[in-house]
Image 1 (cartoon, rainbow, N blue to C red):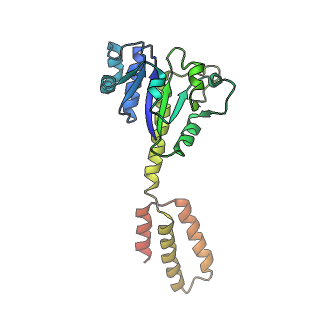
Image 2 (cartoon, rainbow, N blue to C red):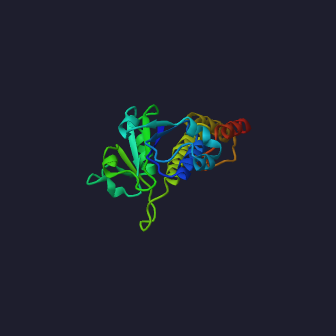
Image 3 (cartoon, rainbow, N blue to C red):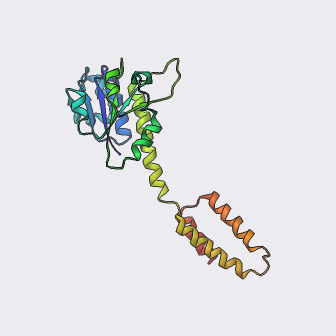
Length: 226
């Protein structure tokens, strides 16, 4: 998933700074703004961006939301008030479910993440143009998060999925597990004192499956048992 972070008409420099910092934390290479109402190079913007000032210096500014999203395949609007989606709630999801649906579209899908205004959020007409509306389940008595906090949660979930994929490649696959069981089976056959070889083999298989070993661990076991 290629994410394009678009901030719509931010009003306060402090939020602009925090957004830049959060974006840098999670590896965003560029920020996009629609008609910012506060200066991107303002004193507070720079102060709160910390080491992410380069994102503000290289930011792209659009005049309209349509212009900002025209190169994207899927547009995700974020909101603390999901009822803004109008009568059609079929495209309203939690942040995690929204990412799950986007993930099935392919890694080259260009996704726009819209972060609304820091005072009124995205307008209803803007939300209605989104393909997906993402909502964070918060306290209904005070549901609206600061826009930088909302973006932080979303980007964290994006990075968590990337991390899961990266880690999953380190675990043993079916073929490696089968090779381990084959080595164990050969070893058990040589042990004359084992009465119920099938039970021993099944027990070992269950223990190994629950352990969820990585490739290095499986290869170590194969070496030890061979």
